[in-house]
Length: 274
Ligand SMILES: Nc1ncnc2c1ncn2[C@@H]1O[C@H](COP(=O)(O)OP(=O)(O)OP(=O)(O)O)[C@@H](O)[C@H]1O
Image (cartoon, rainbow, N blue to C red; front, side, top):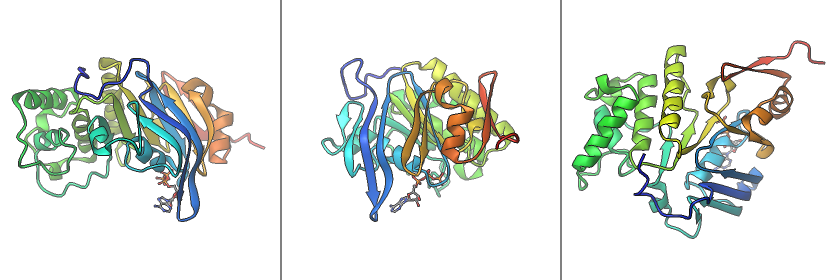
């Protein structure tokens, strides 16, 4: 993937850096002392129980929210010191609750990725290059047969893949995925994970952060993980070191046995737990 349109920053600078970040809302800590560094080619999973703060963290990383304390640097730029709209244009943010109501076609939805808007911008017609890029992504994500279909007629699984194609339109260095497999049946989930693995292999410089509750929803290419509990990081590092029976049980406050087979993870209640 060409990344020449993205804001320039020196090679080797992390794509994302959160340093001792707190987020306080309504007098309550939603995140406390969270630090995370994401480099090119890394694929992070953020896991934790309901209310742990996963979506809040993703909002910070996507320059949607600001920290109450600590610093967040996205693509080398510190939040609070940069035009976040300009920054957001270089992030691919996949929100499965995409609030589109009008009957745009798949192709039109993918093209809204250029302006990061929900509806097409009537004053910005896509260029021939952008139209070609949209076709390529629609094909890559396996939804070419639906390119002219209305968004409102798509299944959840098809929508998920269309939203990833949309997020990739601005050729982002960083893809943020908030529970992308939510509501998908088994086949749709497996197709989505295969698409993600395929994309990651095809664009090795792109990094991603994927939020989920479920280890079964992690693509094989997941390289790192961060576990959150009540706004605190309980473990962070390479996936093989973090996604362990002991650390995941501690994070979810439940005796869980973690399995790892053929690149994929499973989680089951530990029957032999004390
Ligand atoms: N603006 C806000 N003001 C006060 N509390 C908030 C606000 N936004 C979120 N919260 C609370 O902060 C906590 C963390 O929310 P967040 O959505 O980040 O958790 P999560 O890990 O993504 O949860 P889930 O798995 O249920 O989606 C929750 O208890 C939520 O109710």
